[in-house]
Length: 361
Ligand SMILES: [Zn+2]
View 1: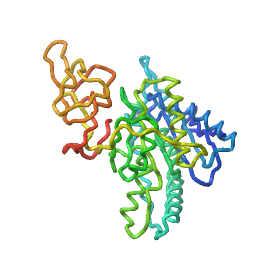
View 2: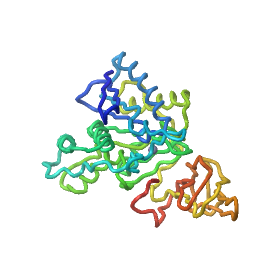
View 3: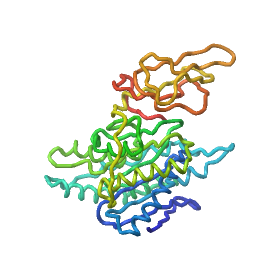
View 4: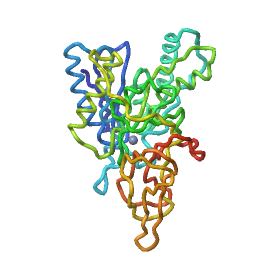
């Protein structure tokens, strides 16, 4: 194992753990891009230990890069007794949005040989990244993370949701290819979108492949980077035993894909994949206290009462399910204001108003 350190700003370093032989296949896993989403950090710590053991036994067949804390900027943002890790406090920008578009590569020599095209495109992505001159700590962080991940075959970005069951976001071109990954985290929702809006990290890695395939119909361009956002549970889940289980399951993903020698194997996935346009975000129209009538994991029918928003000095407002499906996320702070998302339901049928920006801010 080699440990690298990259300067993001004076006093801010990004630590990177590298395992296995470079120059062949590559997997990249990061956690804590939203610096206040904690469970993934513990999972990668456990996975690092397992990979070090596998490396000592000569079992690694690929380069595996881990970044257990991908956001050193966010980790400094403490105030009023809490860490704020989702947005950069200076700019207000979401740490998981606005990644550079690596499909913008200029003219490319492409043909019928898929492997040659992958090599050509990765080299062009490397040149495009090398030519960028990011300014400021936030853009330097985005650039560095993409530089570390852009040439990987597998990219897993470990997040968590406010109060949630494990779920996963991935592109439709990568499904059901990513089924083993969803099963590994025991996902209760799999949300598919080709473009979810805002250029999050996983799509900055995977999306250029299908954008280039559409732009060059004469060439054979496979979706060469399987990138996914894994929501490992609730933001505040810090449970070493659960992290060990999730790390063991991710190691089995690496084994199953031939990146680490070992038996692999996953349990059966317990849900169907559904379109991200079909995911209902339950938004409050009013201010008040939120009293939930449903638990995480409840199967809802359209029109079911999910929560009541109670104005301590006035009325009560009922919030009902806009679609049928599983309630897989709620908010941990029981207070709402107009537009605030207090729940997410994985529906099966696209909702007509769900366009362009499909993720929660
Ligand atoms: Zn996140």
